[in-house]
Image 1 (cartoon, one colour):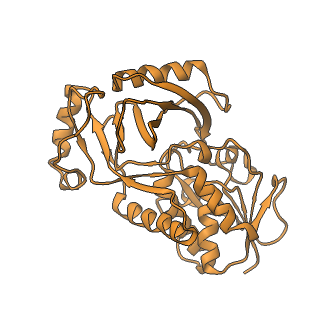
Image 2: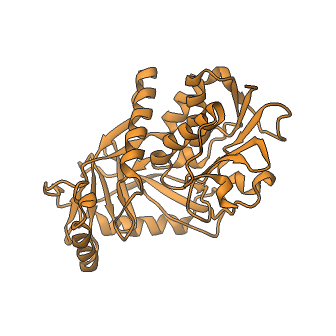
Length: 331
């Protein structure tokens, strides 16, 4: 096969590149290596039960199995840790949510995801409604992930902006939010969401699990440092942190914890979300030399490995694209 060009070296592009490298295919990744991208700013959390409705992620077991193997393989290959297995403590924020969860537990698919252990939280947390502890969860250090993949794929890496479609071979666009302006896939409608995250120091807090309550999560990084977030702004496409978002996150944080903290960093990026809320992959229906991998949104760490594997198999071995994610089925 002629060379494959991947446009974009974020989570999608790097994951695809890793699978192509392991298949022995000739490819290159074109990426400008910008300092602020959705991958670099992302929290990198895998949480099996999400949202106010306490919903299990679709195809969770399959996605989780492939994601674990993918990230652990990169750790083994590089000798560098970047993927931490942990648990998620989900705190209820109303009696109504408690009732919803009790109904969820009647489903064995949900009851199998949680432990019977106590929350085990200190008095620094506001946990008056109780909650549950998941059997698994994870945190990917997305910045380290990108650094490692750039090193692993350095023979395939071109640091540049891609100004036009390469004239030869197959081009796969993994552009993140920039994909909304891609003329080859103009029928794919994006609904990007700006997200902002704080990094805080909480000296009195000792917790190594991910804590979630309502619309805030707290992610431990070690040495009393935590990340807290995140906001969703559906009307902004810039990457400038705002005072409004900082105050919103701090207000939510103060409802979660009773402890003094110091804000030490504030970052923003734009999530590449497709209007259908699905990640889409595959080749153009009218030109099989052009492909698409985008829309990872806020669950990309969980979904990217399976989708990158599927797309690599499709490009290299003509294996079918999973219909749930096929860009050709989204016209």
